[in-house]
Image (cartoon, rainbow, N blue to C red; front, top):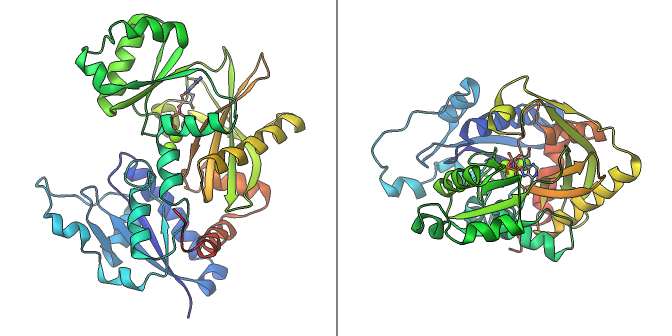
Length: 357
Ligand code: ATP
Ligand code: MG
Ligand code: MG
Ligand code: MG
């Protein structure tokens, strides 16, 4: 009998709608003739309140692109661990959830407990990849080039009504201006602010601390940067794709620029020289290994236009997967079309079962 793939989408994060678009593209790829012969597909939609729906309700969300309305009342908690009965038929899970509760190891822990293989990183790789402070510590340990940064305890910020007391001078010395202030556990640039002076730094700290107890302040990578991304695929012998470059008009690649059609352009492959390209590809694989990622990840870099310096920005263990997203487009340009890519990911999930962490 054919393996039954359980496509898991939606979720409790702010990236719910992005997840629906990603899942629609993945479901379409499983509908292609080759994959139809290989797999059965079942849809599982996690509502914004955390409840699971399957079958025609999940199909309806995929078709319409609209989240199912949830009741304003907190759900009976028991609903949260009563999975739809057809979950028992799934032989391999394909989580296509972004952000907290999807990309951070929580759902991966649940699937590990179910003892069913799943696509992507296990608990450790997901959690380390999600938390920018833990991620940077792992990257530093692997000697990967990064900007100067400082981790900040958000509760300390609130205790000092976001003025960060004496700490702010130390921050200015160690990080300097301009700098970027980020909640440690988010994506899509949510809660990120750029600061060029103390007043801006204070309001950026306040914004970030509203989203997360853990906050990070980073030096700007360069006066003029090019944003470069590399897709990684594999388990113990991961491979790197060609590089992609993102161009836009905004001050930085913020939420609006990411999600307003037409504001950002993807250039694939990037026009960087062969030697810079190879350096970045090697760093992407090193970054993937440093956090113990598996299956897939998109690794993001800054290339200093004037300095020629490459710095590693971050890893995303469940990157956007819509038809126009960077990750599948990078693989298509490298010779792995979308339908083949989802097949490879399922095979990688089966290969590494049981997940080690
Ligand atoms: P994603 O949606 O890719 O998960 P994210 O929310 O994790 O994004 P980052 O990639 O860390 O956020 O930062 C978002 C954007 O902010 C970057 O793409 C870049 O434009 C800008 N940025 C962040 N950090 C720096 C930095 N140190 N120097 C220059 N620009 C930066
Ligand atoms: Mg990210
Ligand atoms: Mg992300
Ligand atoms: Mg990013």
